[in-house]
Amino acid sequence: MKIRSVLTAASLCLSFLLLSEGAQAGLIPIGNAGFEQPAFGENEWAYATVAPIPSWTVSAPGVTAVWNPADGVYYDMIPEGQQVLGMDGASTVAQILLDTLAQDMIYTLRVEVGNRQLAGEAYSGYRIQFMAGGALIAEDNNSLFPPDREWRTSELQFITNSNTTNLGTNLEVRLTALGDGVSFDDARLEANSSPTQVPLPATLALFLTGLFALFRIAAVRNPTSTFKHWETVYSIPEICQTSSRTTIA
Image 1 (tube, rainbow, N blue to C red):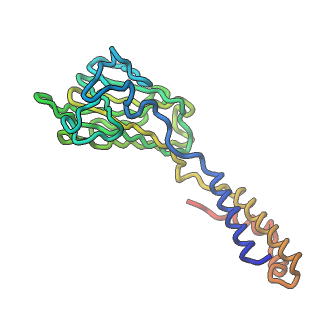
Image 2 (cartoon, rainbow, N blue to C red; image 1 turned 90 degrees about the vertical axis):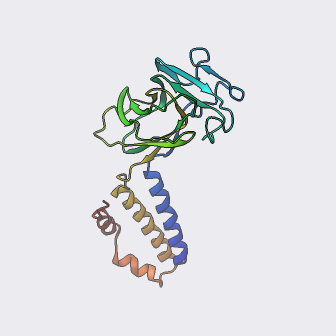
Image 3 (tube, one colour; image 1 turned 30 degrees about the vertical axis):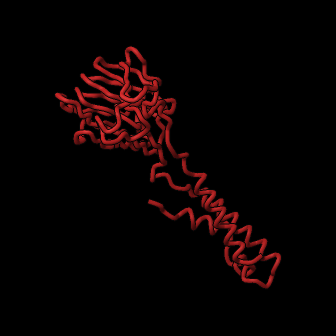
């Protein structure tokens, strides 16, 4: 067995172990995140009291409607799809997700916030809240002010650990208009492993044990090689002990 083959196999093993140690990461589903349902023709809309918004619950009074704005009239562009959520008069919509709050994760919630251009109407601001088990864990309280006809991306981030409260409870997204002229679109939630998650010493020991076994095979097949000398100098316990003392910040 050539040293290149041994090192290649070792690299593949280590890569697999490192990947298996991390938690799964990616987008967490938000139903009807772009407000494309119920579907309307151009410049058509309906109040949520008449046409309920799939996946979302209207939890505060006010004017809330899914809307298909005419191209280039109220906004220069639409962030996602053709429709948006238009809100007036201190309205709130909320969605409780199927996913639950997990330990050692970085959650990032992004929502597009729009300033609707309509004669005689002033943009009043917004609030976006990220919840778990009904408790607030992150909030954007009107930090952006989109220019007329434009959108800006609101971003919230929350990092969990073993001391985080409400672990295991359902996640929730709440979108609130503080008054008139506010629209929302393209809500998305991402979860990634926290940087504090590192391979355990036991995992590294397992990897080194496998690597040692590969060298033993090579030494048996070619007793005169440097693999045989390497085997007589080092032992598995010594290697594992050395690796377990390594500190990863």
